[in-house]
Length: 255
Image 1 (cartoon, one colour):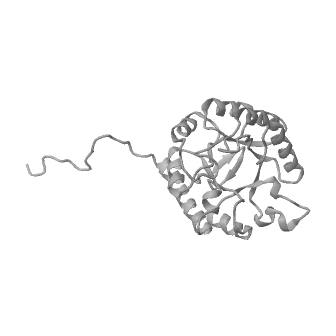
Image 2 (tube, rainbow, N blue to C red):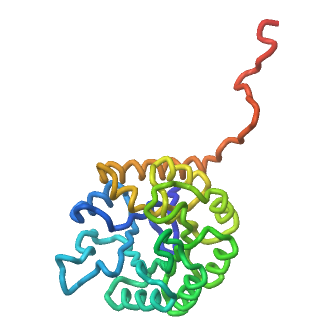
Image 3 (cartoon, helix red, strand yellow):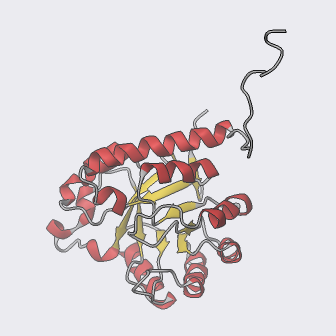
């Protein structure tokens, strides 16, 4: 059985989503996507410029990928809605990743403004994936507003610190009905595998791949880690114990 990720009725085979920023040379993006095996790619609208093809990041993204524009740079719900509408007008489709960030030090999302933008854009027919704090009440409100998935952070954007919010994410996985996608903070393949073992549906990566010495090899490493973590989750992890448990009987062998 093929274990596909389904978001708003769209099925994709890969559970790794990659960003398209921070690369030393954007020409490497097709190799990254191939190595990662990813089907969904995020793009910042400010890097989509059809009037200047040489500066348009979309020229590096192969056909057939799901383009997920994000509202990077938005500080309010109003700005996020405006960016989303502009992205759709420019031909980027109706998928949108909502980022509303007023905090410029830690880059933490503004939950209230994110929810406002989600409500407006869902009403307008967008497939909305909000970047958010891993808070159960906020996630439930996003789902009630029509979000197609929720995207809690594992650690601050670009920090590569891993699953600093693991306990909160585990709660979301158990309680939220739409896909839970880790967005931000994952820095190592081992972080990604651990997240997938919890039952997270997918992981969005950018900095960890783009800043590696060999981004293509790192993309492939993340692909393997995410596939392994997902398979382990589906297999059912064994129970843990505070004491040792023998694999074979310890007594009676010589009796």
